[in-house]
Length: 258
Image (cartoon, rainbow, N blue to C red):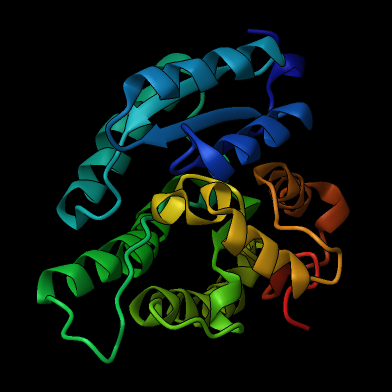
């Protein structure tokens, strides 16, 4: 293989749809090869792989349920490791984007099931924590980790107590990661999207005209966000242009509820 053709490699969890898809596409547009993970929809994942290939990226989709913490170690040491060797002819990646997530409405004033809380903890905190920890052995020095939070750690909206609390924990973890990994030149930042038109949370922002109007009315730029508003920021944080940025929470919300 011609070494001059070797590109940097990004691993994007939850890259088969929504924000993750746009992150993957923007990373490819910046000249990176991309590995995406998907939970259950192989058809959507393969469609994204085709889109990435059309942009000139070597792309692969791997199945991963980030909420199944027992599956993280074999995913990294077996599935990811063998994919890197067999498809990318290398042993390491350069960027990890912890994007995969779920949305569950959990009012604190109502009894929340233990199962629902545990699922949110596993997906949004433990999954990102352990995946990042085990990927470290496969992450090149001077690479980057981008975690994904939410504007709801700042903008309090009843019903998201557990979800936002887990994202808040991830924001704190990001600072610790940046501090502890700085010696390897690895930068760690976290992006906090505002309200975005996706199928997340049942598509409430995308499909409910009144919700969309209300959010637009309290947003400085006068609209709700689109998936295409987020991916370019994540790709930027994985680029040389962001080489002096680490340990930061970057909200991408159009000035929602300033």
